[in-house]
Amino acid sequence: MPHRSAYVCLDCRVSFKHSEYREYHCPRCRRALVLAGDAFEAPPRRDRDAWRVLSVLLHAGLDFRQACCGCGPGYRPRSLREVRERLAQARRTGVPVARALATR
Figure (tube, rainbow, N blue to C red):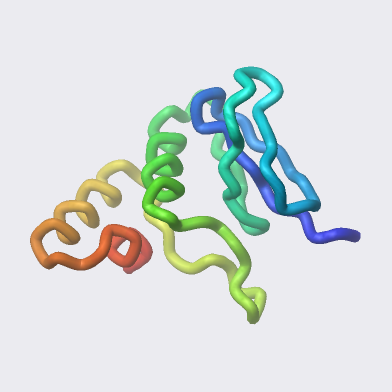
């Protein structure tokens, strides 16, 4: 079975699995899909807050790829409250946003 990664459309709140790394477009809105990784599980489409969290994570450069040992992508915040706390911490301490979001 070929390696498959998830690509998401943040506007339409949909995800697709593809086996090649290349640029894909959403069949609904035709915008470019964002690579989310092979360990990504999409939240329900109606869960707007979860998709907002996902948008922040992907725009910060974090994804959901398996680590080389197969142990998963590491910690990722799951709620808007956790995202706000980590963004505030990043502003206070000067830590890069991606590192603050990936720290438990």
